[in-house]
Amino acid sequence: MEPIWAVGLMTGTVLDGNIDVALIKTDGERIADTGTYTLAPYPRSIRALLEETLRQARAWNFEGPEPAIFREAEEALTRAQSAAVKALVESQGMSMADIGIVGFHGQTVLHRAPQPGRIGRTRQLGDGELMASLLGTKVAYDFRSADVAAGGQGAPLAAAYHAALLKAADVSGDTAVLNLGGVGNITWWDGKGDIVAFDTGPANAPVNDFIKAKGLGEMDRDGRLAAAGHGDEERH
Image (cartoon, rainbow, N blue to C red; front, side, top):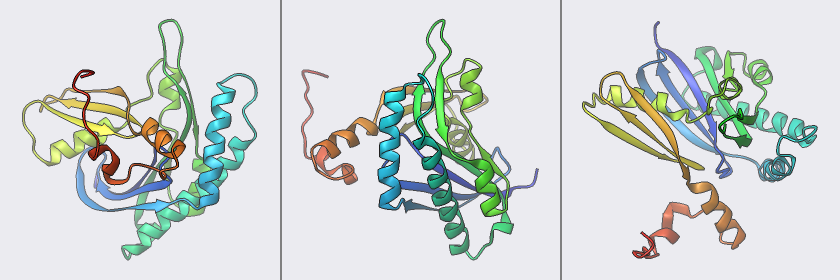
């Protein structure tokens, strides 16, 4: 297919208060133009709403009826992210008519990985139909739920993008990409056709929780606190 302009949205489990918005031109396999990106801050009220939603999601833990706050949070984040898409597109002198599709990850509020003999569970908030009506374009959304219901992990999703980046860079031979979001993951590519990706464990999510609990802000911005520390060689 011919490359189209697409907008990708991401808000990870780290919940840093920003909406990652990227504009690229792609045919779905290769990147024709990297376009531009921005970090669009959530209004403080929505950040507080999402933090409370995550708290209630942990208490719910897939037992009984879903918390009523899910519906409120889903609409709020969908409207905020729709506005962020429109703002980025218009900042480039384009209109939504120029956009072929929007990829809407939504917000993971609870994820339980599968175990032997037990299928996993995941809950993503994001109203793709509402976003499509607000923006007047196609929206792809809820990327994880079907895979988890079929027995998969539902993660990581970054591998498809990493593969496109490596192909564009014409990288040859074994290459690994480390992605540190709320949870860390690695993508390994053999330079030919095989791609392997998996989660490595906690990354920025517990760090941010620690920073907030200590009253030091929302995150360790630019890694300044980490850089000021010293490695514990005995524990290594």
